[in-house]
Length: 157
Image (tube, rainbow, N blue to C red):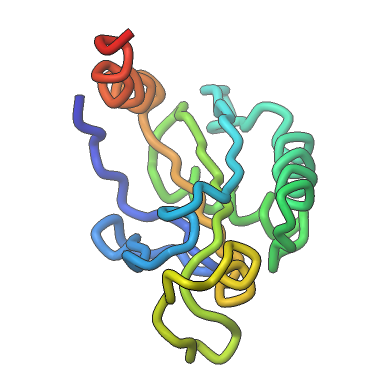
């Protein structure tokens, strides 16, 4: 099931258009799976969407990142505000929120050699930079999309 695009996704400090929310093919996480995420719900209220236990979720995201050796470049407060801005940008009264932190391609100066298959994962980690994105969209569509993505694996059991 496809996900209905939302106007914006927060990526590394900016709300970017849906079609511009992209990562490089050499992103460390695509190759090694090093990343963390949270699944958060925002509920409809008379005052607009309310994100359930947002600060607790962001603290857990940051703690999970530390466990896998990632140092997120944003504070908990900054990520809470980024999540609120992302939810507000959707115009949805309720939604599912997916903050995801991953090791991207390149470092602070953006200049690194191409990945070398001779390098071990520790060295590749050093060639990466921590990145974070926040998506907010229709909960049922997102969960159905995940179920569809997992279906081939379930059929092979």
